[in-house]
Image (cartoon, rainbow, N blue to C red):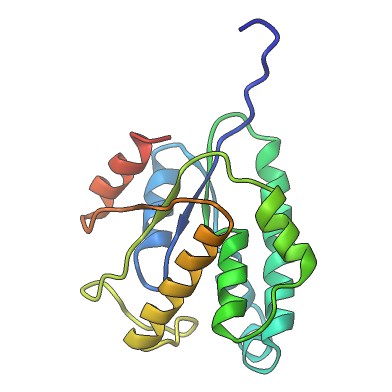
Length: 179
């Protein structure tokens, strides 16, 4: 249609910890797709990040929100799709898991700053789950995290599409076929 401007596609890979999200985004980037890395992991790897997460979960959520907001706006300036490692509803899911309320600005972002591409869920996959310095949850906590973030995405009217339990190449093919 003449004069129609196509908005960039902002897609997301969500799910609990250790489900292969970051590995999948690395593969998508290798294939030429713009990606945004997980903001929570970047915060946790920074000096004081683990302490912030432990002593002030609401402050940690605020830091994730600010970083996610910058990434979301940055993706608007790109041509073509951008795939995010998590998104605003993941922050709401984290807060729910912590028993904390979702602040209005985060709820507003979840409702109003829409991801316009598919939201892919990397389901729990015990065979690949490995704790590390930032991924401190045991398997049961990882399952609870997945349930909380998946519920948050649905609360904000997204229908996540489960990724297959397959190697990273097959998962990347699955995502690319749907972008």
